[in-house]
Length: 263
Length: 263
Image (cartoon, rainbow over the protein chains, first blue to last red):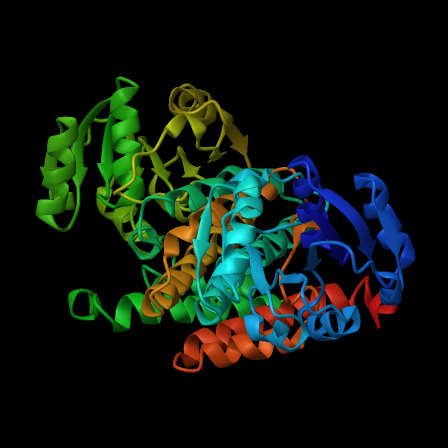
């Protein structure tokens, strides 16, 4: 099964290496930026391209791992009718591919993917959706060679999952970044927070997060909340984040179930 | 060295058990709620109290692990002059104890502590501060028996650390809770996010968080951001969180270093 990779970003890169590792032959890598295409193509022994007109029509699977808003135009430019088109987006409907081929699908790797970080793909859940049972049959083998964690979800569920991942992961990482910048500015060692960050994530593994919520807001400790907002006075952005999330926690834990108990 | 524990919350509970494990004799546990005092005291073989007037004056160390705003009144009610008073607060100055004894200090366990979750105290950094070198000399032994991770910081640094921990950990857990509630409502399995949550925390262990930021906002992908905000339309609170954090990420990654590069 010959594959063409459209895209050279984080998802394209990790998928390309995982496919190569699973002994698939990747014929071409396309990116509008030739040096990006070449960088990835060189690593996996493929041909780099920066022009969609030169994409071969003789591969079996065309894996479109580009920004969501570019999926449609890339699929259109391929001008293939009976080849399997796949996209990798959490937030894009499978039907975006309908006009461009009779067999298509989605492989959405549910993972936080950075180019810089090595990734064990066998631990990444793959959320799959297919246009029809035949395409599914053709692709399941490939999917299982990448990861044993295979889930079939429809486009709406996939979108919700992606949104959940953005909230729980992307936004958490942004909070780590705020803490990092704040402590660095105050000449306090960010390393001290690192075990705490892992412990927080670990606690969410076997608990409902709301049952292990800690901190001043869940105690409705307004004195500390005010002190903290004061400490952030040089950074209006961070103050707004602190205020909104604290208010959310107070509201969740005080206005709901525990209201009567604590007032 | 005999110890009295004032308080019966998360920090008091975990410290009490860690001290007992380190062979210290805990004489009394005080809580204004007698059944709380008794629950903890029974577990560690101490006497439960709900009245500060009956606190013994014959212990060596009085460990005040209560809500920040209660530290001062508890310390005052003890009426001890030459006994070691300790508090455990990240956000309270050491000087709150100055009027009440000549020897005092702070042991702030930098960890996310839930009563329900067992805690290996030897992995918890202890942030220490002392009124004077003699008190330090007396307490260092005790501290090292609890954890090898000992740091001396002043009150201002400790407060910043605590604030950093609230941002990076308490707030992250709240985001996990939002994702949990959202996916549950949409009948999507929250378990799928759990490996992702751990991976996100792990990436922050050996990277600067800003170097591993992923998601639609760091790509300034307004189309997905709008879709997500739309998906959250039943929950104005969550929409506000999504909007503010996305704006923060866009601003951090687009208005700062990468502005020229990406426009």
